[in-house]
Image (cartoon, rainbow, N blue to C red; front, side, top):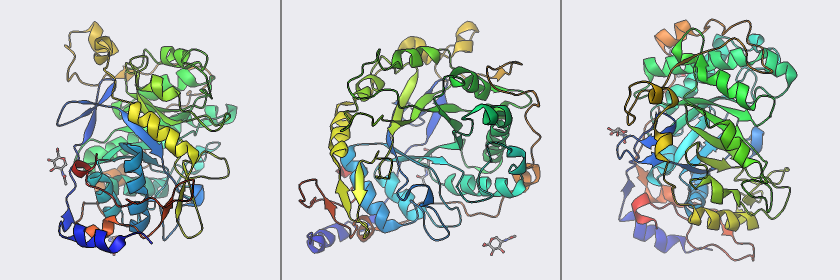
Length: 430
Ligand SMILES: *[C@@H]1O[C@H](CO)[C@@H](O)[C@H](O)[C@H]1NC(C)=O
Ligand SMILES: *[C@@H]1O[C@H](CO)[C@@H](O)[C@H](O)[C@H]1NC(C)=O
């Protein structure tokens, strides 16, 4: 057993935790801390223990305080500043986990969809699933998480366009959801929270879909605020050049919004080395990419995990955990090249950089391999956007020091028990 009792006695003197993180905002093509004005690079992991079935009527990854205490203490060991969660249930309470993440200085990028029926777009016939019931779910997620300053951003969709049929059916619907979310945020959120799309890195759509998501046809809110790329092209001993990352950076060098890896970490060569992090967090990429999220925290059948679990919920740190952790320790925020601090259009107009407004690009008529001819559909959420959905707005809560200590055990690969497994407040952690 770990020495939970003396730890608790010591900590309970400190009593409660207060969460303070500064909201992050988009300025031109980078993220910035809205208070310190420092550029923000995403250093994170994708987090969905239980996989796509890890969300139901009673449980999701951010509803279980004990599991959060366990995993957030591990996030702190890794040295990350962001997690991405793919699905939550907005009728559950997330206040404690979000407070704990904030206390640890960790931000959340949240997908608004879930595998449940009525809670995602069908990529092949999206018109059957784009409806007020679906939007009620989406807006409930947005409303709840708009209450937390450490909600970094929302994803309106993940890899919805991934083949010929979906590329002809769904791009205009993804834009409709982006627009509705941004309009909902403008009406009901205490602050502007960026909305983006997470794309499968398919060369047929790499540039065209990104460009289409960046523009607007009828209303400026149809444009994403940032773009996420899921890529697995850097494997093993590859380099910036042999992996093709150099082309990736070149292909997005014209983009006017922040871009980051919403998933990365090829596992064709194992154990993984995560050498791409040496490029991601360097000036090779910092003008175009704002960091990324490694796929993924929890081991599943597809073998990408940094940690494994037993059926009781105890954690087993895997070899990749230690490699990722040591690469993360070497990843200091790179400077952003001066030329990249100014947006494409403000460079040619009279804006003087700094806090210039985000650019607005009107859509063209042709985007390679996409069918956008029907145009962005009219909103079916207008009434909901005006009235608001009946969902709670999350808020930070007081946590006792007991909340920060999980009862689970964490084991190293040699079977030894990890000693310190409680969440530390950011300022205490080093
Ligand atoms: C959220 O951030 C804003 C802006 O920095 C700040 O004024 C506010 O107090 C923060 N809210 C909480 C609950 O920390
Ligand atoms: C809002 O939701 C709560 C909790 O589910 C419910 O008790 C209440 O009746 C709802 N209010 C309206 C106006 O639908």
